[in-house]
Length: 235
Image (cartoon, rainbow, N blue to C red; front, side, top):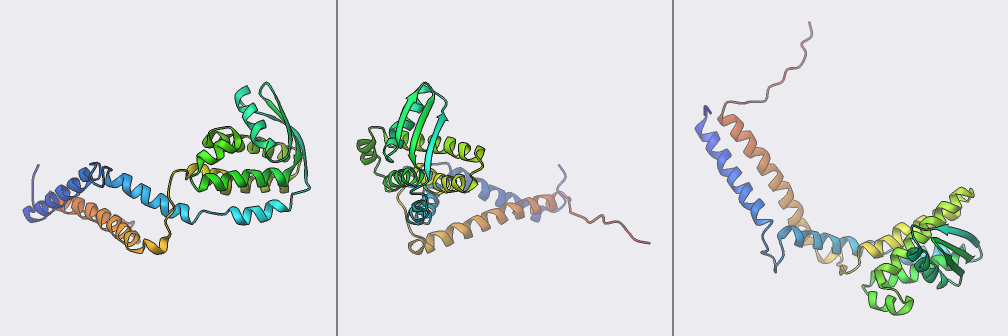
């Protein structure tokens, strides 16, 4: 390899070495037994969870469907899941039964949604053991049953042309059930108390990205490679 600019090439090598050293450090357990990447992931999850609690407003919307009737057959993927769906939906005051992979549900949509949100609130607070005692199922299994049951109910309402009820179910699924399931075990942390850490993380990401870009630029300059414009000339 022909080096035409030793100074630029040396700077490029130094910056590449620095970039590599930081990259290796990111995969070492140097932050209380965790890698910096894991610690950063936990931090951003905590901040995200604090701003993802929509259950109070979802409860208000669910109240609008308190008297909306539900009477349908939900086809699940197997017998076990069908039984679990029947168990959790019974908590919403519905009459349920499971036969094979099919759960029959008869009740009020609003009450079912409110029951799902009650369980979601418990899981959001990382109290899986409370939900397990309440439903007779491990916390995450209960929430998964709610998810699969409501997802099938949503499909049934869509097929019946009732887009309004289907949309109400989707809101509860996406902002209630899924959020509480995905963030389970994570302690929420408000942005207002983490401004410094957030600022450092964003600045570090910006500087680290630019550092690698400049390293490549100096290496290319060192071996005589340059970016040139080859725009079309007008005559």
